[in-house]
Amino acid sequence: MDINKFLKPYLESVPRYKLASEIIMIDISDRVRNRRLADGFRREQLAAALEVPVDMIAKYESRNYNFTVEDLCRIAYMMDMDLEIELE
Image (cartoon, rainbow, N blue to C red; front, side):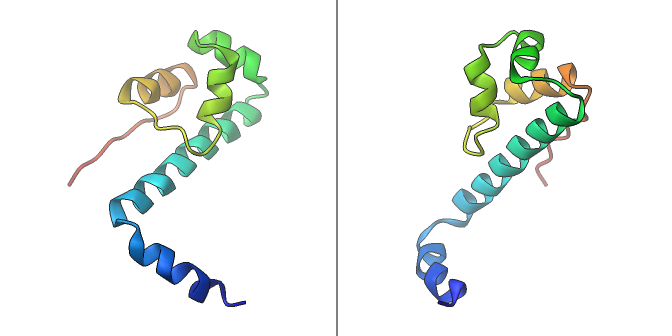
């Protein structure tokens, strides 16, 4: 089956901003998880550093969590990551 033919009706029916936001959420989740793993932290350790419940780390890494700006600032600060938010 041609995947493009399968996806085309879906992609045409979903607003572009929704697709863009999904891609951004996936990217952020992956970056948080990859950084946590690269730094050798368990979810419990990151949760303690961020002062959030362990299940919140699972949500952050779920690829569909809608991060707030405050979430992003806290994560970036505690994980020593750069954060840039840009609207042009």
